[in-house]
Image 1 (cartoon, rainbow, N blue to C red):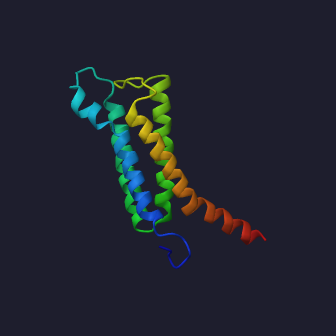
Image 2: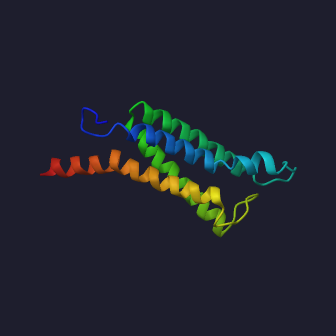
Length: 138
């Protein structure tokens, strides 16, 4: 399907689905809710709040993308960047309460979905804005 402005209308629902998946995969639901019980001296509570904030921001971005708000795509790109930075930090220096395993399947899927979101956002937001700027200068 093609919208009136010539862009595909499939990008919007795809972007919504991808950013929600990114938020959910990075939330570590099985680890935080099922695998362990919080101990009194647990230092990962702050980290859990970061992952909850990441999930909530992903939902806000999804709603904004669905409602044709351009800033939703940019928020999604920020979320993808933060998610990837958290993944690299978890695997290199380690994050409290999370195992270091570069090849954990859910993390690999998350990185793949993040790359897909970047590609969709590029075709939907970044490339058209770059093209508009270059044509305005000419």
